[in-house]
Length: 250
Image (cartoon, rainbow, N blue to C red; front, side, top):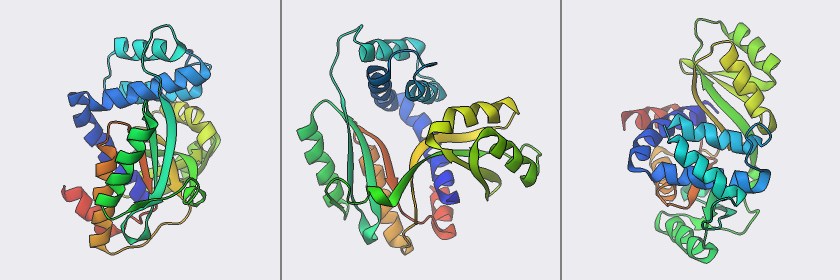
């Protein structure tokens, strides 16, 4: 699973660049709107909203933008109505793919996402075709901060995490999605440097491919992420050491 943390870190850095163009801010605004609409505008009572706000702050989204998105979600300010959809399918090499979308036009987005799959060697399937291959987990990549693995494991488990594993020079911590905010607060409280943090759909078993096929899967993932309506893309691709090394060069 360490490859997923490494790729999450790369995407996190890439996200900072996207934010300068305002594209990522637009996507995060939608996430805040949906969270506020479904659970109310108080992040202390709405953990999904709190998570969305934290992600927005990580990329320096202005407070006014965040507040405006919350008000749109609660109905205090008029705006477009978005709905959440998850598309499922397969990429090159039979790699399972899940795509989280927030859209104001289901028909348009459905056609565009399907075309992206097809243009990049994949195919979009029906709902449920690959969902059972994933599980929703909180995922953290943290610096050791001078602490040994046993100490870090104790901190993570006490915070409510399920597991801790070495991930290169850092450590990967997994937890139940419902415990994400509690674990995040506990890690910050003891001064651990969090490189990346997300609630993600992680594959129960990774799909092995050759390097060229893996690159094609990453190209599909990038194309999907470039779509304005796409919030998250998850795959079952096995991030081999060879692939991780190639990714680091880019």
